[in-house]
Image (cartoon, rainbow, N blue to C red):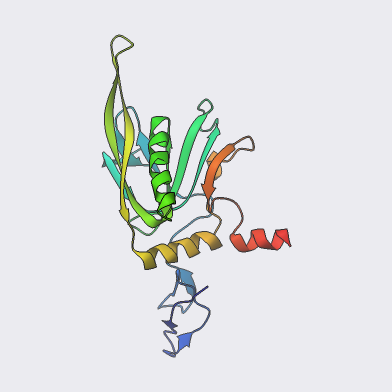
Length: 208
């Protein structure tokens, strides 16, 4: 794995062994991550399918769309967060404050994510290679009276910066990416990428 060239703030000599996602604290000289991540507790972004609004922690509303580049994900079926068993997509990303964050989708929104995965796969890409924009789309259920209104997430994408993608994938490979309060034993995975308790190196060590 390639490393970045970083200078020691005291000697101004190159520090070896610095990874692409690391930097040096200019005050202390310590090697630190460029990204903030309290393991198992990423910043929580939410999609409210009733109002069609994205928020941080359900309180700080940020609008009807969210743009992000996935670094890890899983699509699975489980009963979580006091919800009945259903299909979920849990996507992890780095937000504008350089914090590891996560957002959950379920139902038709998950189907829409799958509609992206297939063409990306055949073009030798994955969700990790693109910047997604999720936008709330209004739907009506006319089978009930009064009619029900709900929102699903529609997705569009553009290819992400190659160097930034490489850096963030290296970060996700070496740091366990998961959300503690959505972990359960019965979860049935449909697909996943760099998700879990163990880093790639730890998984290889166990396999030896």
